[in-house]
Image (cartoon, rainbow over all chains, first blue to last red; front, side, top):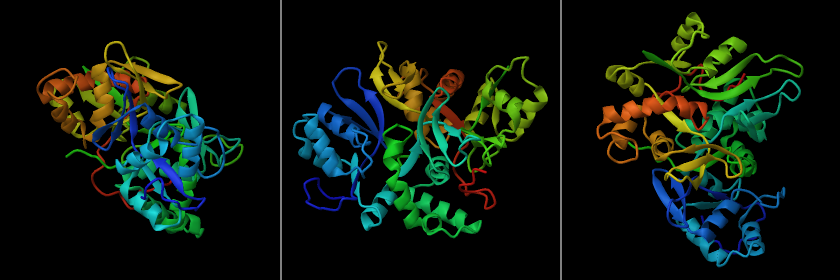
Length: 212
Length: 191
C-alpha cells in the first residue's frame, strides 16, 4: 500500500476503507472505527474521507480509487485531503489495491470480509440475483458468487483464504470457469464489486482482531 | 425456566429456478447450512426469541434444537455457562449517533435499526471479538458497561439482553468457528 500522492496512473486502482464504524463518541467530535480489536478515532475530515472511500458518493460506475476520492473530497471542500488520506493509509484505515496485481493479494491476506446484515436470498423472478439487508431494508444485491463470499468469507482468517476455499469448492463440484476456480481471478471479481457492499454497509473489511 | 434463542445467519429463501417455489430458507450455523424448510419451520425459528409460547410446536422446537438452529438455555448459572461455551455472537450494522444515555444508535446512518443503551452497545461492539460467549463474559467483566464484576454475573446480563438484540436484528448467534469444516458441507453452496 503506497502513499496517496504516489503518482500511479493505473485507472483500475481501488481505494478501500478498513474497519467497522462504531459511531460518534459521546463527548468529542470524533467518530470511532473498530479495526480488529482496536478503536481508532477519526476527526471530521478523516471521517469524511474514510466514508467517501466506501463508494463513489456521486454513484459513478467506474472503479473507485484514490484519484476519485481526492476529487470528491475537493468538491466537498475537505481541507488537507491528500494528507489525511496518507495518514489513514498509514493507520490501516484505508488500503489501495490494483486488482490482479500483488497489491490485491497483499490486501486480501490482511483483511477479512465481515457481513453486517442478513441475507435476503433470491426471488422466483430473478433467481440469479441475491439480496442483502435486514427484513425491512434491502441494502445491496449481488451474484451467487458474491453471495457465497458474503455468507462464508468471514469464516476464514483472511479474504484470500476465503477465495481459495471458494475456488476449491467450485472446482470440486466440476466448475471450470477460471473466474470461479482460480482464487486470484475470484479475488479480482470480488474486488470489482466490493464498493457495492461497503458503501451500503452490507459488509465491511476488517482485520482479524479476534481476542484470545 | 428455559429460553429459546434462534441461532444462525439468516440468508433468505433459495429459489432454484425462475418461477420455482423457495426450496428452503438458508441459514448458516458454523460451517453448515442446516436451513429451514417450510413456513412453519421458518416462523418457529424467527419466534425463538425468549421464553417459549404456546404457539410453538414442542416437537418442532426439539428438532430445531437438535439441528443447532435453536439454543435451549436453562436459566441457571450452569445452563448459561453451557450455552455460552457453545455459542458466540456476530454484529449487524454500524454505529452512528450517540444516545442521550451514552449508548449508540446502530443500523445504517440513514436507517437506524435500534438505539442501544451502553450495556447493549458494549455487547454489540465487543462480544463478537471473543471466540465464544464464555470468553466474552470473562473479557467484558469489569471492563465494559455490562453490569457485573464476575463472568457469571456478566453472562447473566448477556443472556438476558440477547432476545431483544436478536429481535432488533443488531446481532445474531452463531457457534464457535474453531475446528475445520466438514469436507462434505464446507464452503459456498447456497443451494
